[in-house]
Length: 321
Ligand SMILES: Cc1cc2nc3c(=O)[nH]c(=O)nc-3n(C[C@H](O)[C@H](O)[C@H](O)COP(=O)(O)OP(=O)(O)OC[C@H]3O[C@@H](n4cnc5c(N)ncnc54)[C@H](O)[C@@H]3O)c2cc1C
Image (tube, rainbow, N blue to C red; front, side, top):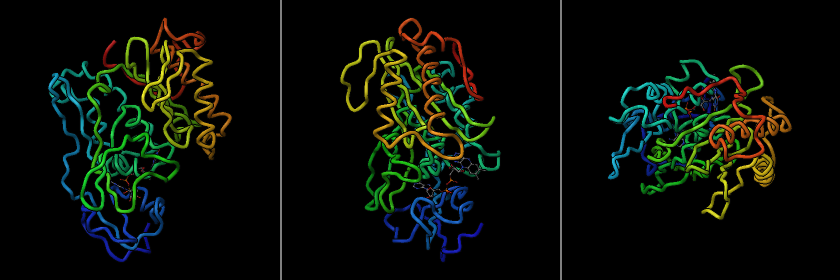
């Protein structure tokens, strides 16, 4: 579709050249399918960042022998998907990075063909801020931090889970450009769990939950798609005050009460054609129970019915047992 408001398209990834009426252009799969920029209105110029030459995936070797990952905003979904099957990502045995097991189901959660996968970008998915944005789910589930270039050229860092405010709304200021995302080493080493459900098979995500076992007695649970923005809870055998993240007892009814409270503070469960709020709530409870049972066996209480159960149409294949 033509974007009829546009007078000029230029190759530019420099926020210092931003003018009112500009929009960043990455893969264009949102901008050209809606015929406008759904996050800030009809643009008069498009600044195409795809020629910036940023390497899509960069491994950082940490002092303790672990690796963390930097994903460029311009990394295509197909490039990220390919990482899931690399034999030695970052020079490490694949089995030492079970967090990468989340990539395949997250990419598969895109209701899109390979044509879309080959042009749409990780940064474009985050900046669009749709509740069913699978890259938002993945990056939030990994505790990834967005690296954002301000208009004066300086860099700020914001957790992806906090960057998203609601459908098509982010904390990105006018002219701010996502340069990339940093995925901490710990998130790649920790055992993950993945659940998602849609009203139709391979339809748009109605609830997508990612868990990570962050210690022997605790997991971090990230709820997306059924909520207007990511909601992150720490579920543990002995809850306590812990930074900005809410901590919850590892018990089925306790975590369900906690997610209901958290969601009511954000204006309620997401409501659109892909699922009613009541159904999304019921599915979120069900999928979350399954993740508690899977990642904290013998510790989580009140989730017996969920043991060994996998609801939803996408499965995560484990690289380690
Ligand atoms: C058939 C089809 C199915 C789809 N399925 C899904 C789905 O299931 N879930 C979903 O979430 N989306 C879906 N989409 C929408 C879209 O493909 C994705 O959100 C995609 O990842 C957007 O990336 P892009 O690079 O094409 O973004 P663009 O269209 O280039 O840009 C989208 C928005 O992001 C801004 N932007 C892009 N890059 C940056 C950056 N680095 N910094 C700041 N702002 C930036 C742009 O200015 C614009 O506002 C689908 C689209 C199609 C056509």
